[in-house]
Length: 97
Image (cartoon, rainbow, N blue to C red; front, side, top):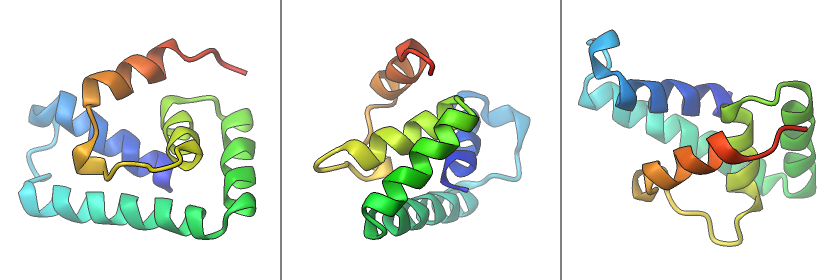
C-alpha cells in the first residue's frame, strides 16, 4: 500500500490537472496514510524490510523502490521534507533486480 500511495502522490504532484479531486485536504490525508504505512513497516523492523524487499523483487517499480529506500535510511525524512527532484532521479537511475 505504501508503494501505491507514493505513486499516487508523486503522480499528482507531476500532473495535478489529471485529478482535480485531490485537493489540499485529500493530499494531506494521502501523505498521512503513506507515513503511517512506512511507520508500520519500520516498526516491524527486519520483517518490514524483508516484506519491502520481496515486493520490490516481485514488482521492481518506482513505488516499491521508494519504500525500500525509505526503510533503508538511518534517519528517513518525512514525506513533505523530501527533495522530490533527488528522489525521482534516484528512482529512475537505480538498477533493477
